[in-house]
Image 1 (cartoon, rainbow, N blue to C red):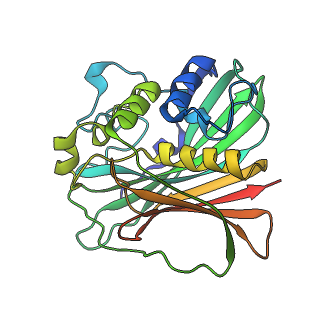
Image 2 (image 1 turned 30 degrees about the horizontal axis):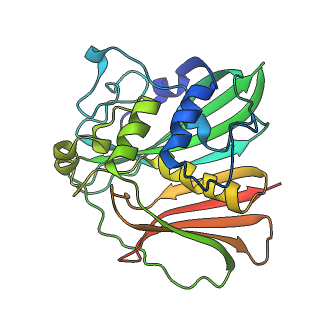
Length: 283
C-alpha cells in the first residue's frame, strides 16, 4: 500500500487580485441584449467567479501529457491514470469585492484508494482557503478522481419525478467550442480534454468536455439571477461529463420541507440522463 503522508503536508500559496478584466471577459461569454443582471456594476464578485483567478502558471517543461502540471510534486503521480473533476463543496464566508487582493492556500486533505480488481481509482480532496486582509472569505474542498486511462462509466442515472422539491426554474442550453476555448483562455486551463479532440477521444470520450467549474458557475449564475437568495454553501457532483454542443437542461428546485435548501440538476435534453447535481443552502 502506497504511503501518501508526505503529500498531505505540502501547501501551495498563490496571491492574486480579483480584478474586473477577467470578470468582463467571462461575462461576455453569456451576455445578451436582455441580460437580467449587471454583476460587475454591483462591485461584488458573484458566486463561483473565484475560479477565474489564481490560475496555474508553470513552465512548458513542467507540463504533463494531459496539459496539467506534471504530477509527483504536489499531487502523487498516479501513473496510468487520467484526471477527472468530481465536484466541490464551497462555503461562502464573506462577500468578495472586485479589486480585493487575496491569497489562496491549497493543501491536500485526503487521498483515498478505491481501487479494486483491475480498476485503479484514487479520490483526492484538496482544501482551498481564500483570504482577503487575513480574513477567510471562501473555503472550497475540491474532489478529484484519478482512474484508469481507458475507464468508461457505464452507469446511467435517468431523470425522474422529484416529489421532495418544487421546480422553480428551468433552462435549456449548450456550451459551444468557442465558449470552451475562451473559458480555458480566461482561466489559463490547459487540460487537453477541453480543446484537443484527438486527445479527448484517446481518453475515451466522443467529444470535448465542458469544464466542471464552468458548469458549476453557470448553475450559480442562473440561481443568482432568477432565485436571488444569498448563499452560505454550494456543493456539486459531476456524475457524467457534459460534452461540447450537447443540449442540456438545467432545473432549479426548492426543498418542500427545508425552504433553505435548493437543488440543481443538469441533464441531457435528449436522453434525460443526469450529468450534474448540486445543492444550494441559503442564509
